[in-house]
View (spheres, helix red, strand yellow):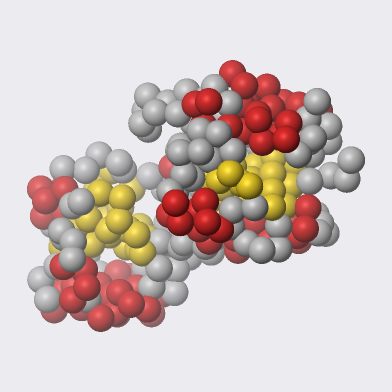
Length: 258
């Protein structure tokens, strides 16, 4: 069989349960191992930053990863590249937050931290997803790159930020939004290009809204049985739920494994 490139979302696709209390079903582990033995390429595709995802990647038994919402590429455990957000657009957003008294923070580098000008971000969100470091007099223009911006507000307050419309963003928590890259297909294509592969040999698995970008007509897209309806509508094939042997059953259905 011709070598294929498999990309798996983590939460709700590979892993069952909430972050910190997750497990991978035995059938999923078996399917991935059989794919490797058959010579196929397997990778994680996540919106998480490299710094926040690299240990998880290794724990899950992978060496390859699309991270940072499509802007990060890791091959054979080596970080190939991470592209930051559009610098000027980020500055425009932070300037608007300051003008309109929105609480903000940002990540200037590939680490498990974000910088904030005061304690308001943590006081508002009580978030421990990553460490929030307070720097008095913080000026984003003192940094050369910006990888993520965080704005603390309840929906739909973010709609009042005009500059936000020029950037990709999402909301995973009710207390704040992530301004971060959001097109996993960019990283998938970059990784396949690295190996001079064919996009038609790509297979992606996903379940949530942030997986919509990687469900492309150019390749095979598989939605988990627990996926949102919008993703199922774009899928080439809908398999069973992640905790009901969904990945294993899909691989058997397409005869990628015995």
